[in-house]
Image 1 (cartoon, helix red, strand yellow):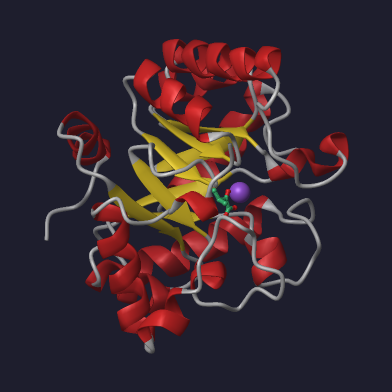
Image 2: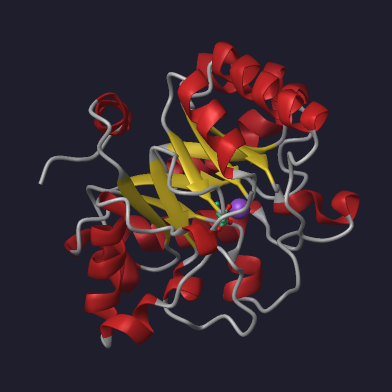
Length: 263
Ligand code: KIV
Ligand code: NA
């Protein structure tokens, strides 16, 4: 297997070939995900909730993401790995560089940061210094205290327009991948079409180039699973089967369904 790179994901977007990605936090699951054909994985700060049991992602540290990135890299040597930059680890461009360096040296191929146009200088600084950036827009969980809960974003016309303009501005600043979380399907479609870079959706309908799910949601381990997720383990009956079914259904455009999406 050749290593998966940003060129691979760009080609999928051009060829309109939908692709499945997933969060991964350790070597054993990363190996299974790679074996079942998942080529890109996110070491998400969702580990603050799934692994650590917190009720938000805010307590997660750079060192913790670095540790889990090393674990995932050991299990999936050829996967394209995106590492989340934790809350307050990129509040200035300089701080972002320092912390992104730690994650890249731990084995990441790219870092992900949450937010809109205020991140333009950060995206520029990172990409100029050879750190590819994935931008996370829509429901950005690190802002839960600003939003007042985990709520759909971009429902109002002005808010939707702002999200689209932010996405375009960040792509122009150098961002090479986007995650779009919990936005209406029509907005997800508009943004996916407006951007050259691949867009990975979660709670954004089946119109994005790729999909991502938190692995614990996909395996039915989350007590109150979000509307946009699906327990593939229940349907498939084995870990291997669950991952394989997820990949298949994403590639065929069968997941997410309308009931997993917002209008
Ligand atoms: O931390 C995470 O798992 C994420 C995904 C939900 C996109 O950011
Ligand atoms: Na995250």
